[in-house]
Image 1 (cartoon, rainbow, N blue to C red):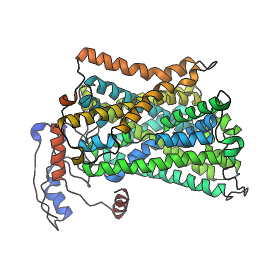
Image 2: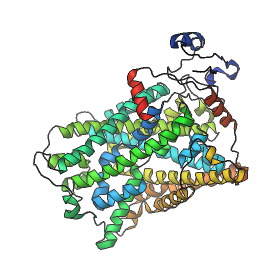
Image 3: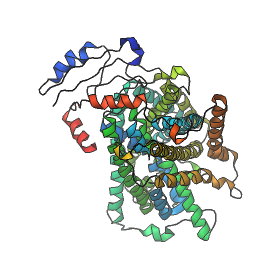
Image 4: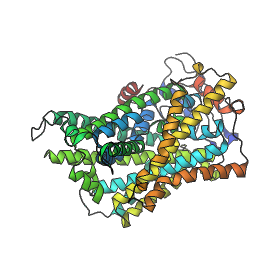
Length: 566
């Protein structure tokens, strides 16, 4: 290994005057223990064994997440209750064919994030490449989106636990889950990365196991020796009629599945949120985006196909679960199928793993919500005290605000769990569609700025394909779906004020924040030549990349999984 300079810096809360640099060449055979003793040992702040931090003036989070952490954060934040339980509602309303087609359709952030990997990137990019007010509105929309998902998953955890017993009251379980989220997210980012890695790995194994289970049972590997194959695609059929009969009813069913898919599928936003804390980001992030995309596409498309194979869309047990709010994974199509096939023990195992999936997803939402709020605070769009980080780089007050919003999960104590879950689903779906629209439009403005200022995108760490056509396609589709998402409330006899408010509130909140900030701060819509592409943060990232030293994994197991995700 050639000699490399390493710059060590204190965390920002120690004061800029205390920042010290120590450049020590690391040569072949230089023992890790000696390096830690002579270099890292001379400074009091603790550092993760697998990383070396460099001086940063704008971000106070630490780059401690390895490739395996980044990819599993993206996967873990996306695979949750929606894929195992809530997907059943889409099956009922649209049928297996509509469900499969919708999830296939749903399956540009990578290019911008790898150029400037900072905390809360797409939120801050919206302000830098479009308009400051646009970034503020996008930031608060994403924060509300992530924060609302925390109580959604907490309520889901409580419901799943009550599948076994109602001995522990709902309030007690909710309180325990909130405390656990706080413990995991406060004890440094490396603990979050490790805990989320193993929780997300469990979710990956679960969905893979359920896909294999589907294949085995459909060819007769079940207690009934029933080779049902694709029977339910012909009887009762592949496309369910929703509200109306005939072709219009089948189209409305497909539209309902498309809305369900828009709630369930995410990924690039979760990966990008970790950019500011990723080791070697310009190498790691492109691989993470590609890896997460292909894995999630396979999981969601095959998962939606498996559900349509296992359960008919007119299954009475599944309908009762979503209509009457029966407990826990009774609403999961997989558990319904296991009960129908008279399989014992396995439903309890799946229920336990679904519980872990819900808990893991909620954990990711706490992380992403707190980082989005932290990004707003760094840009001066939220109170300054929210920029305070612990010595380990955890934005402590942002985590506290997120957990305070999680207290909304106590609404379940006085309401039906199914009703509360649907409230959060409606709110989150609208926010997520707005979020996707923001990503697409921000990329369009970024590309215009690159073209106007002569920045060759071929020189970037990552260049996405078929742009800007894909961005325009995504922007158009997401914008339309944002307004279509709550369409069932306008059908005759279906008007419901809470459903309308939760479905369309964010469509009103976003422009209010945008125009309010624009009028107060007198912000300007940036032209392509006015966008500042070369910032001090870009120089800091380039300095980090020049000084980056790859540290060996702590254990053989870590080395093995690092090779898999690299």
